[in-house]
Structure formats: structure tokens, C-alpha cells
Image (cartoon, rainbow, N blue to C red; front, side, top):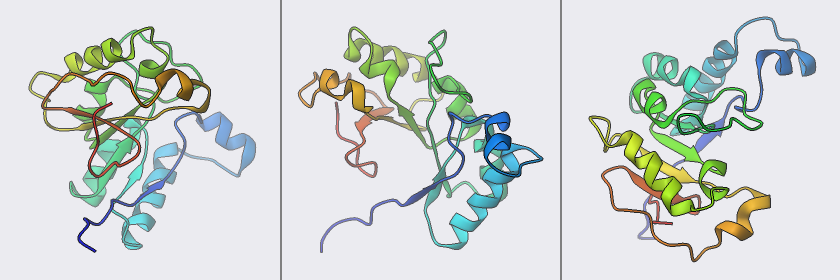
Length: 174
């Protein structure tokens, strides 16, 4: 077909869930990382390219399953930002240092008074020795999708790219 194979990742434990939340809905007597690692191993065995997991599990997944197995990390918040409904969050810098390959940034950008400036601030956090080691994905959430709009101004150019959720394999500027 002349197109590149899309990346396929599986979701593990949502970043909006804590250990207490899991215990309330299923038999759970352990650490979230144990569940994530078990699901990651199954995802890899099934031929997936990676998983979606919090920064808390990124390093463990990379150590256990290898550096080529992708980790997509949601719950990314700039330093000092409100965590909202997210229980397991991290700054962009901590996520990249932990081994995350793709950072999913939604509300901190699309709910900002100036989404482009918010994106620039996130890139500024990364533009040190970590630049070029990640891709930042901007994922619109329902209630803010009208505000973000598809015609928002492009993000600044950087060695760490910002993309939309329409194509994770080849992020387009937002």
C-alpha cells in the first residue's frame, strides 16, 4: 500500500487510577507496577510495539522488555501544574529520564490560555540533554476539543516534536 506500518500499543493501567482505586474494583494485593509488567509482557508476546503506562512503570518496562519496546506515557504535567484527575503524573523531564518514548500531553496545553505558549514551555523543559529523545503528543479531551480547534497555530520547531493524536507514528505540528 505504500504506507508505513502504524505503531500498535496496548493500554495497561490508566494514570487516573491509584492502587486504592484498583482495589475497589478488582482483587488487587500488590503494586501497580506488577500488573503493568504482566500486561506489558503479554502485549510484547502478542506482537504489539509497546504499551501505554505511567512514568512510574516506564523504566521497569524498558529494563524487563528492552529499549525497543515503546512506552507511551500520559499524565504529563509541567512543573507546578495542577494534576487534575490524574493520580500518577510526572513532568516531561522525569518521563523522558524514565525511558518514555512518547509523552501524551492534553489538558495542560489545550486548557491553557495560550496553548502554543504552553507547548513552548513544555519543550523548554526538555530542551537540554534530553532533546530529541521523545515525541510529545497533544491529545484533545472532549470538553476542550472545540477550544483547541484544528487550526491552532503551529508549535515552535524543536528537536523534540509536538504532534497531534491523529498520527502517532508521524506526528503533525499543532
